[in-house]
Length: 84
Length: 203
Figure 1 (cartoon, rainbow over the protein chains, first blue to last red):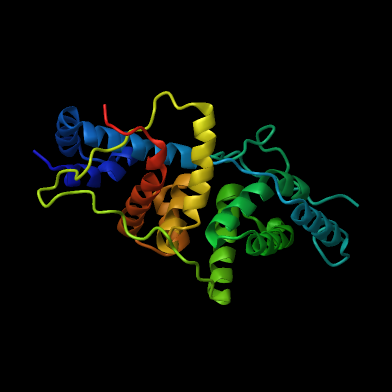
Figure 2 (tube, rainbow over the protein chains, first blue to last red):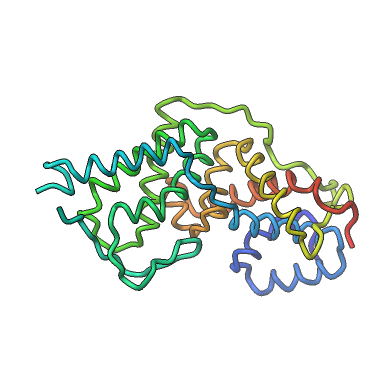
């Protein structure tokens, strides 16, 4: 039998797929009886899930302009990557 | 004048934009179009502000343009760019002595002496409404900037960028156990930041 503190401590390995099977079984039994840990795990998983889908906003226009100018300059530099 | 083109193997990893076709030549312009927003997001999350992120993104792309011809192709472009971007951001932070006020410190003590939860735990709604998902993304963005750097760096690389733990360890010069420990604490802090949006009682 494991405590809630111990159960939560295993969430990282559980989500990462590296929890040993014996520990996974103990955790599973605990989760079946503990709605707080189930809720905690759902929130934990959701946090990871949302982080991986954090939107990638478009570049600020002034940065995009700077980068385009930088690329143009480098590509036309006779001693640079785009030159002879 | 012909642009330099470099052919890379199609090693699309998680979160990596897929090329139009396998081994399609990449020009610096295509690298810019496909990767610049992600590099900027990474720099912004690691540095905590837009201005510094713009400077680092520019530094990174200067390296991209100047060194792409020497790219050996033994790792994906995404992994290489991550390494360059992370190194540039961390060096920039160190050089500037950047310090941010952290609102989120250590994970809250949620357990009694006996190891049980002190309070009922809020659970997220299921299914997650689209509007709530957007709010949670905004909250993640805000909360990330309040994380101590030791947690933020790991969370950004492991969970936002979805890099394997070993790669995160290599990028940050940490041991694998240190990455796992910091990542777990970061997730607990981030979950805590999202919890006000969850329902009040566990099912």
